[in-house]
Length: 190
Image (tube, rainbow, N blue to C red; front, side):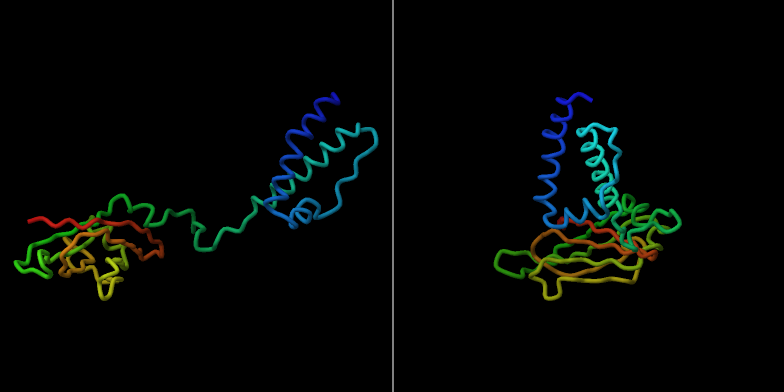
């Protein structure tokens, strides 16, 4: 191997990589780089090639360390099945219905009776266990959990009265243990 290429590789690739690793991982880098003594290299190899071989070995060790993170148990697919949340989240809509109540809550603020609910096919609704609505923090109880499907036309519905619109956080939990979150901006229509 040409000496200039070896110096170039060491100076432009290896050294900055090691400096970055030291700055990121600090003291643990030494333990990660040298969990065991470096491999024995026979003397027939040129010094630059020896260093490159050692660096390559250390990079392979680091790759193994960083790519062998444990996946949390609940994030592992069971039996290579796709979770219900992944299969159905595109087929579920969060909707709301509203109606002016004819009264005022505050000066100049109309009171609206509104209902937020889940809209989907009955077969998909049957797979949902609970829906949690996160209302505006000014509500007395802003977190509402509904575990009863109710009517399939307005499943997992929650009704209340209010004067303003806001974004409602929605967490949909499935019977298989999966879940996903979305949101819905309330719409009041006369």
